Amino acid sequence: MNSVISIHTIRFIILVLAQALIFNHINFLGYINPYPYLLFILFYPVKNNRMLFIFLSFLLGLTVDMFLDTGGIHAASSVLIAYARPIFLKSSFGMIYEHQTIKFSAVEFGSKLTYITFLTAIHHIVLFSLEIFSASKIILTLQRALFSSIFTILLCVLLTIIFSRNKA
Amino acid sequence: MQQIVNFIIRNKNFLLFLLLFSLSIFFIIQSHSYHKSKFINSANFLTGGIYNKVNNINEYFSLKSQNKILTEENNRLKSLLYNYSNKVDTSFIDSTKFSSQYRFTSANIIKNSYNLHNNMLLLNKGQNDSIEEDFGVISSKGIIGIVDKSSTNYSTVISILSTTSQISAQLKNTNHYGSLKWNGNSPELVQLIDIQKVAPVKIGDTIITSGRSSIFPKGILIGAVQDFKLDDAENFYTLNVKLFNDMTNIEHVHIIENIDKPEITNLLNE
Image 1 (cartoon, each protein chain N blue to C red):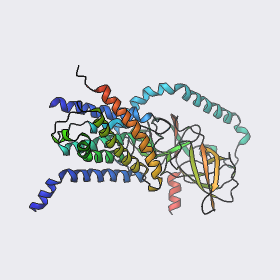
Image 2 (image 1 turned 135 degrees about the horizontal axis):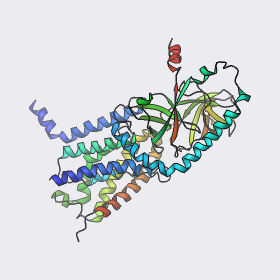
Image 3 (image 1 turned 180 degrees about the vertical axis):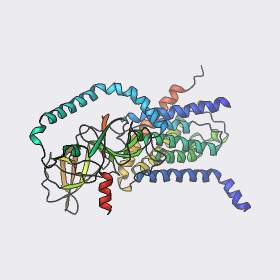
Image 4 (image 1 turned 90 degrees about the horizontal axis):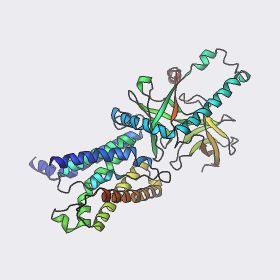
């Protein structure tokens, strides 16, 4: 149990630092940045204390906000996907989730990709609408959300492949 | 009573979500209003310290280009210095008084940002160097922004690349003034709105600060007019201004304190 807590604490700190110091300075084509700190929320264990999980996601978003001076936009979108996660777990993994035996290292790649895609898309749409905060710029909002989502999804998939434990 | 408690226990996840979500919205709204972002800013001990450490390393990668910019500024200042006797403004007889209205502090940008809608920068000077809110920040080439919050050793700056900031600016040739805003699209272009229709605007005209706000002295460079059009009511021009500063590559900046500012505000409030 202790090792689980320490793994997630380290993951939290590393993801926040990586977000603030590396991924926010990519500025691909001038403004496209990935937000792979989502990995913490995506791959938090399924069997969890839900209140703690929602609170941790809030804390994660708030720390990122503090680094990026963005008010509370990351906190809001992180809390939202943390709360909505079970719905997407159910729709992406189906029966395995019902039996509560899900292990992210052992699921099919396709369903994992749908799961990442759904949550990232929702997170980014909320994030950018809160950042731009103007209904008249909806095209700009959706455009930024789309480009950043593609970037984040690619990066999340790559990172999960690189850091997955090999069963060899 | 029992039912209320039951309801809370049953929906505790949703209530927690609602609480945290509205808290974040509250922080967002607070960050949109001027000088109100009390807790969630990067000018605190932890984030400022980390950015400072990392910037100590990152500085080395841009040494060459920053050196070039500083040499250019030295050149410009030298030429000003040696040509000064030709252009003495006789209205300032007491020259010590003239030069002491503004106090300059040099600082380094340790966090730059230009891809958001409301960009904030972080400087490595704070209250220990008597940096307070509402001080102006400029670089050698032009205007950068206004200090928003300062902690002991760090301060955050609202960049001109922020849709909430508004800075008074004017044409260099005539005294027609307007306010400088940003529409959030390109980090190279800002918009100067509310310039009177009678103003003789030409493409390539220089835009400078107007000195109306008592934050910036008059005459700090901003940029050159790229194109312009009349607004919908056909009374005012909206100008696209190309910044002299490359906002994506700035490091050494100067913070301006207007020593006469309390006097000016007092006078205006009377």
